[in-house]
Image (cartoon, rainbow, N blue to C red; front, side, top):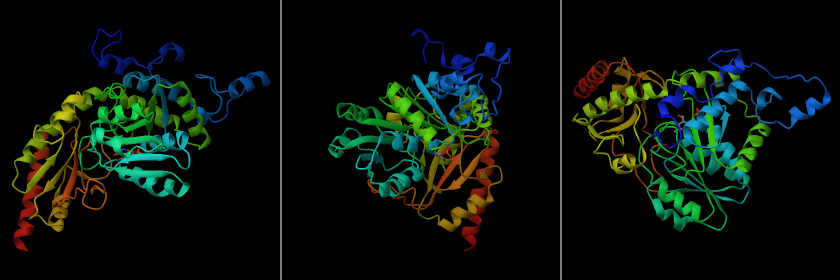
Amino acid sequence: MAAGDGKKHQDTRLVHSGSHPERFDGAVNPPVYRVSTVVSADVEEMRHRATHPPDMLAYGRAGTPTHWALEEAIADLEGYNHCLALPSGLSGILISILGLCASGDHVLVADNVYGPIRLVCCDRLANWGLEAELFDASVGAGVADLIRPNTKMIIVESPGSLTFDMTDIPAVSKVAKDNGILVVADNTWATPLLIDAPALGIDISVHSGTKYIGGHSDVAVGTLCLDDDDLHQRLKMTSLLFGYGLSPDDAYLALRGLRTLSVRLERHEENARIVAEWLQERPEIDRVMYPALASDPGHAIWSRDFSGANGLFGFMFNASVSQEAADRFINALTLFLRGFSWGGYESLAMSTSGSSIKRPVSGWTPTGATMRLHVGLENPADLIADLDQALASMANAMAAE
Ligand SMILES: Cc1ncc(COP(=O)(O)O)c(C=O)c1O
């Protein structure tokens, strides 16, 4: 956020947004409100609490000052009026659909979004009458051809999960606005810092705070931001009715992680660029999938819409490397830990070969074994040495075959 628009710089807001020491006897962080039951002085107060006025405790699952501090900070950083803190990123997408769509509604889902979201839309919710349709994430304004009278929502994620291909979100949003359709975006890769989600035309911005917001691989949390008061109330009630409560301890950890997000992200990006550029030169590797690289097909959209990158990217071995050899590579890594998820301080590696990486509508299929790396906060020279020795071990095993 640039100065001059009446708001402080992003780094300053990252430190101070949602912070109210005066409410907590001067404590700089909000306390963890471990509470289910809240008692009232009289029945009138009970009734008042039951209407859930904002910033008034009613019942633990309905939110506490710990949750509100996190929600206020994320809403401010993202530039929306409201935020809901939820128990996972996945629940942010799910609550949006469950709260705002009904049986018979048509929902367009980009074919590169996080696999479980595709599955939940096209299988579980389809069983309840949702008309979920996958679409080619690269279609941009061409999404107009897919709009039906009952289209209610478009779900996007850019860069896409595992393939890191970019979607032209402003083009999709324009079509959506013209047709009164809501755009829901999984912005986990961007974090609340790297895009201006409202300016891209995103109506509901969802994050898995489990990743960079938490930042220490010890919390599951989701956030959902939006401007519209009525939709916010509806989604808040939906999350309450479906029992999607975030624990106050996890709200606290997410807020604690958030405060250092920008310095961590800068280092993740710096390290990832060094590692990605090194991998790009390796003969075993066909392609590095990281939109921050000038050679990436999504680089132009990324440069236009993003102010930075993070430590997560993919790569594809060339066709001469078998899946078994690629598995040997992963097994030989010592600093990159073998693990799902990402966004913590540590480096992680995971094989992405399989059905989730295939793009059912665009038809894109990898031509070699694929991997995802999360580049952590270690020294990049050590990370490169680890990759180098794992590639050597893979080559030795291939030579012996
Ligand atoms: C892009 C993206 N969105 C959502 C999720 C789900 O996150 P959570 O575990 O917080 O539901 C993930 C998890 O890996 C993800 O990569």
